[in-house]
Length: 299
Image (tube, rainbow, N blue to C red):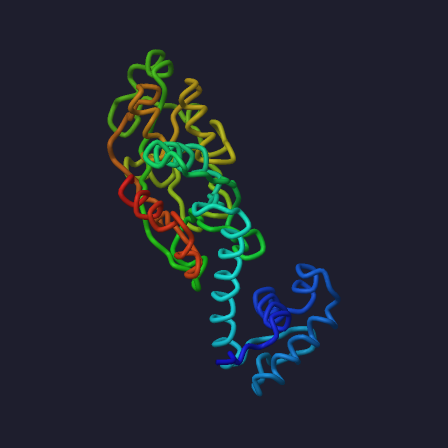
């Protein structure tokens, strides 16, 4: 039976225009002119007999029909891309492209993938470190570790951990300042606090001001050290430079090895969970769901 398929180029142009919110971004991605993208979208509208975009000067917005077509088209193109990759690679298990927010890429995702490979010796991956938001289709991403549930509403989102922070330091700092263990860090001066700039992925985050306020103390945030990521804060703490509000999951290896010490067990939770995110069509890709299930248990 002949399948009533629309023109593939028209579907690609429409999907890219919907994802970019305009013809210019789609044209840049596809290597054609905006006029060519517009013509392909019109071809698809003529084929379907439906209006897919409302046009407002230089902006476009999906109609109800366009939203329905976009959801299906995106999944279909992801499926075709995954199948093509598998066939071209010429093997049942293809390399997975994994993206992670930078703060967790080195200290959590990389060790987790190494441990998974011991279980599955044929597993191969590409690990990328990048902030939210990422373009799954354009950069062929199979799996993403993201902070929060709501960055990718059209994707499958699996919460894997809700981290928390506690005051941590290295043994060298504790040897110089044995009174640092006093309740509420009363003996830790503001000069020794390591402050973290959590970056654009974190819309809510714990701070020294919040943690110390429960002990009736307001730190001078102009003093102490300041770093650009929670991972760097742990690195400074390991080297004995001061006390960081460190994430338990991120610092797990250093805590287990004694390179970090928890000074006070009172935690502050992060505002959102870390989540594994993938396009629905990627569930068919060899090894992906097994990896997701393993990472859930590994936390």
